[in-house]
Length: 326
Image (tube, rainbow, N blue to C red; front, top):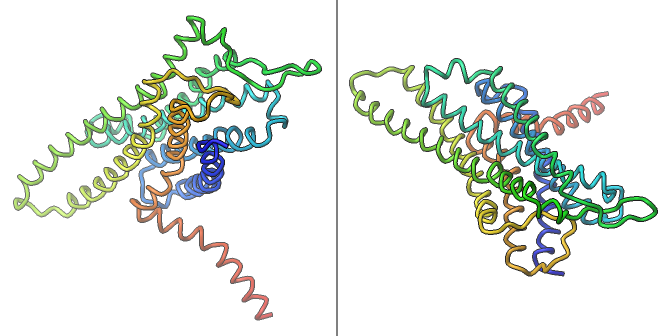
């Protein structure tokens, strides 16, 4: 077996085993609202965790684990296979664009105080999340036409393979370019741009604060700066992790026009294939890192996580002690 296939066989089950419970735990903790975060940012973080959970389920568990190891299951029916191949890019789109709008929300909060009260609200965040989810699903419908059955047995279509007629057509080629821009380049550029604006605003605020230091000792100002510092650390940790882990895939999208094909049968030792698969593994890893980031940068999140992890043991211990007393 090729080395890259052995790595995939080990990597994807580990990602699923960690990513699914981690994202579920994050959703539960953030939904309780005890982490000291604003309601608006909590909505975005819950949405990001839900999107990452969908990536783990569809892209990692169903496609890379179950479909690969059970090639003749119901997942191999062409209709089911096409649905999976439509959902894979849709979940990635949702995860990517939630991260983009999380970055925009933090930038508005720090840089645009006048616009903050109108934009950084739960209602706006909810509308953005719903709109992005619907658009991502609609935008990936053409993938249904991008694949055709591998074979037809007893009038039953099995498997999926890339349709040469679709990808060789002008519409298919244009759609492929639009996808690479919407999934990779545009989000990358937007995150870099809004982080640049945020950093510039922070540097200006630091210079102003240094100029005013010694003139006043406002405890409220110090508290505000401390809260803003936590928000900044969270923003840069999330967006920085995303940029680093997506970098390989983004570069690969630029240098190669390989399309994601179901049940690849080419040269597994080819550098392009290895680069493509490495980029995918790093992309999916980015759907597992936010929980670690939240636990590292947010004290209250870490405390809530400890409570939830300990709660089953506390319940078991209380039941045991109750039976001992009886």
